[in-house]
Image 1 (cartoon, rainbow, N blue to C red):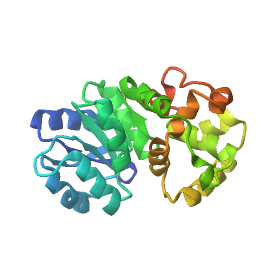
Image 2: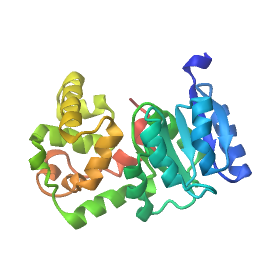
Image 3: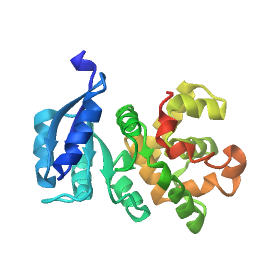
Length: 243
């Protein structure tokens, strides 16, 4: 049983937050807390010791900021999924955190049930964003315009897959949305990884943010292809429960 559990490392400088998060995680049979850290500059050493699957990470930390911890983990421990849990869940931080390599970004005000579902989601390879901030990415896209990704040789179908994956949808959901097989989706993802020089779904999300591909969800041809965010579905935690 233990080998099937999701191993979670909790990083926060407040003991009360660490204790509350531990209680939530340990109430789930499929998860186990493998460590707690209160300083940013101690995280990498603890990751090397405990080998967590998911790091639940605050942004405001002594010793090293959560964003810098995220960057270093993304470079040095790529198998670890990073879920930001912060009191400062602001739009200005959202893109910076995702570009640093985080798989999720949640406010500390989220209900406990959503936090544990977010841990499961990022562990399974999804990207999770607090529902209250989901619209921020679309607004950013609207303000800048269409993505100039034609120079990368991305086909129209690959672009559709890219945008849906950037919304946080699992492969089987992308397949259903586009009316293609899951194997075909996986093939498109392999081609996207090669063309864009990324190695993960999180890398695709960062590309979409950096090149404003999310603008295509709400304007231009993309809006006709699969509509708006449908109640912020793509970025809310609930979107990742049924996989």
